Image (cartoon, rainbow, N blue to C red; front, side, top):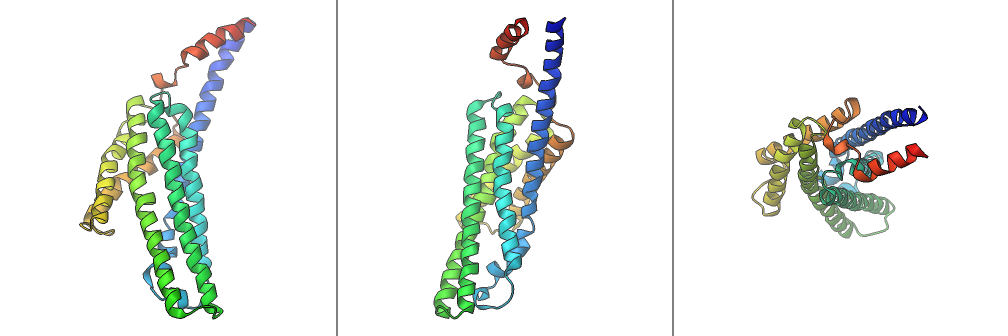
Length: 254
């Protein structure tokens, strides 16, 4: 009777753990959307060449930097939370997804540091500590670094992430297949859009870029919402592996 009770208690505990894993991963995915306001918050720095010589508060820009730090950490959180589950489908691809997320976060941080450096130089300019022309030139170079890190870290790598995680989720059926299908469609489109921008045949704001962005946006949003409110669907991937099956009877007999 004791053995039966232990065996009965094991399954709900495992299901509860998977539900929590799905919810945590979903919350991290939804948190990544707080980066959207940075497009406006960084606007003065990126769109005005002489911003570094202007006066006024830096609060908006600093808030944008803080939001991007949160996004970088949340991106890593999505991969860390999902890895123990999706590795059961393909450990190599799952590890690649984790690596891509870490790489994405690293590029985001480089962009953040570039913007913070511009803010620092603006303070130097306000104190009259350097020649104006050199400050403007340096500030422009730092903004260029941020633009490139954004292109690769928050445009190219999300396309790669969509292919890696989309493949894992599509094959495992952990979520409705329409969700990872969006990622598998959007990933190549996003990657092609970035390649086009690097080669100078596509603009950051263009029809091509918008078409590439839409499925990726819907893919990440729908995945986050599904994981938070629904969790993982029943799948053979969630079945205990052989090692767990061998350990369980030994534990129950103890």
